[in-house]
Length: 389
Image 1 (cartoon, rainbow, N blue to C red):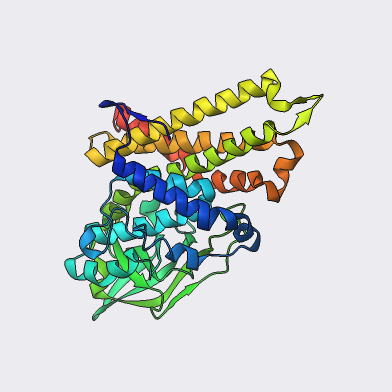
Image 2: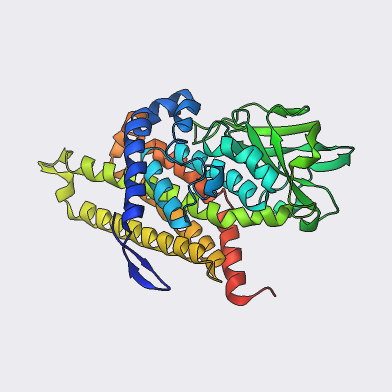
């Protein structure tokens, strides 16, 4: 992969360790994910066994501290990993991202007892984790969530429902945002809820456009009892915890778009070099050459942008949040557009499942919605530019 440019410090090359991390993820993806991705998609199969194989590689706690089995890597390192995995299957890569988001919240905000209790099994991938913020009536307006947690003796009792939860029913732990106080962000707290908690259940698996290998269900709390010691940080800290995870999550999902788009472009380049029309390979027609050139240019621009944003988050730059939002908006839009153009270059074959292009189009479309819609990214960017009015 080419060198990236950091807008703040100039040009840089991936160092030796980063290239080794990237090559490890690429090798695993090529060997264990890519050969199975179309079958998983067709069967709507959640490959928990292969997901758990990423644990010994250090991918269960990419930016979790190493005293609990984490890899203690940076955000640029993580972007390289998710990009490599997504080249084989964006849906697989995005689940690994979600698991890591949940694990990192426990690492950053949990007590030492909570870290030791939960994280070794998460970093090893013995346990899988899901992140529960969105509700049926609150998506972009996350501070309006209604799920409520009431203290009762040594427990909290949760009632409500979460919507669009990846891994729901398959994951072992759920990092849940629930209201313990009044309306607004200050009334929200965070809980670690085990799958076997009394009163926890799951809705039917949603019929989705893409991400078929991931289960997506409601997570339902009906007088669900959670031990008080599973509260992360303090009451009222939940909204800040949720938001703290999103900058990195936005970079991760952008990396999943980047890897998927690279796969689509690779497939289009190979196909146009084989397919003949009017006596010539179709890559000899100038109109197609121009399209391929634009796709490559846009993809490399997206890669440089994403690496720069990840580097800013690693350095804790003051404008890292704005750059994360810009990268998420730009890279996911570009990624979907490149996959869609690759489908067009395949003609009718692009519409067939066996060629793998239509799956990439379906999988990448949701990246423009989750981790904050791209419309919300524009709001964040504009506010950072002009300030709140």
